[in-house]
Image 1 (cartoon, rainbow, N blue to C red):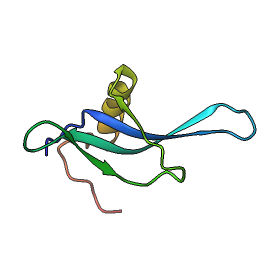
Image 2: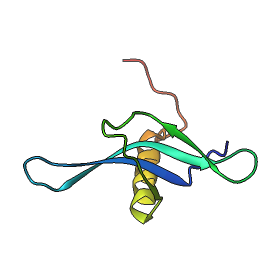
Image 3: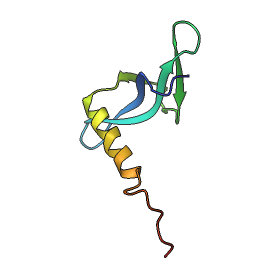
Length: 82
């Protein structure tokens, strides 16, 4: 399986109060190892069984870069024990 997903899986539910859609990322889809197709890896299953697959967009790219920077050590020096 490729390390980079080509699609993201979402569950979409309408808010009872505002009626706006609430998008929850529930998994990823990767190119299949052999031949055409995708391998879908779900972290959770939506209650209604409906899954929306979307391509990565610019907002996702920016968010992923922010998350990677947050988890990256700030220097090569090991931290001193507290």
